Image (spheres, rainbow, N blue to C red):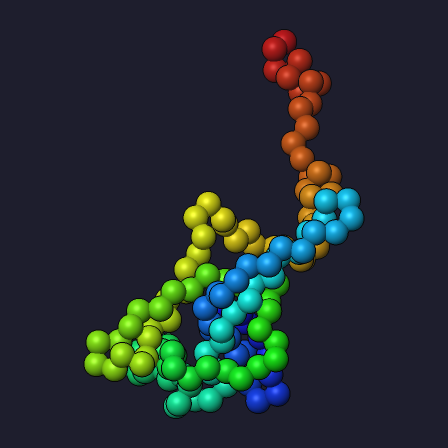
Amino acid sequence: MVKGENQLDDNVAWYGTIIDIVELRYTKQNRVVLFNCNWFDTATKGSGYKVDRYGILSVNTRAKLKTQEPFVLADQVTQAYYIQEIKNSTWSVVVETKPRNVYEMPTNEGESFQEEEAHHGYTHDNQNEDEDLE
């Protein structure tokens, strides 16, 4: 699954199946991984995809997107799998997954208050302690 944008909807997700994985290696052991995919037609609501009253998304696995751009960068995708509908075998329910041992860490883009907190720390006053002992 690839989250993308088009001219009609701002938050279109593109679903497909991987045909081939291509690894391009270049200087100094750098590499780029590409997935060659057959894309489902998620641009056409009703014939390409549908969302039921519970918000469950299904794609028509026979409606393929005709595109000249079958490749996507591996770091742009999210894993998903498809469960075939019982009543209509041409439609499959989309289930998005999260990989094991990968955690989404929140990003804090606000100001850091660490410096301010350091000025208001606790200090120990030995003079008052000596007076209490006498």
